[in-house]
Image (cartoon, rainbow, N blue to C red; front, side):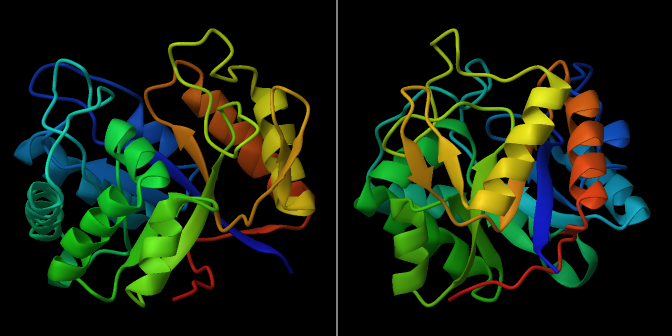
Length: 254
């Protein structure tokens, strides 16, 4: 049976400001990427979201990003590799402090940091080093076929190759920038079919028509997407209907 993880970016509220429907999405996904207080989240939100994930039996992961609350971590910030390593280690360590036995299932970079690490080998290695410094046994989630995956392999870290059901792809396998009008997929049925096709075919069709080969270990849906709950529900239902095992217990490589 084919196995695939299903993850969402959560815990992105801050103080009195509520973003996303975490409690509802956690009923659909198998792993959660929880903001660590830099691009979103705060200590109280981190603790609450972790407890919600535990209650639903969802695997817990850290979601470190740039210190950019106003831009939600989606603006590129130029930093030295050593600064990126320290920034990632700080956030991963902070979230792990709230988890049982201080252990995380995985770590997934957020937003601009994720996209920069997907393309830049030096940034990718800096992100991996920060994760490895805190927990060398955790799983690194990264964009399929990206520099981050290559860096995880070089560091002999476990990794999972990730695809996005609610995003469109470019011919080089990267995501269409959010600044473009066709970046997001908001229709639940379209997103579910996209997820199924990627799992079955191990590829995705880019917006320009090319077929891009992918390895699919985990599928992401964004928690701040206005259609996130319906997207997640449709994706999970369709995958299970097609006899695909949706689970965080995925076989990782390293």
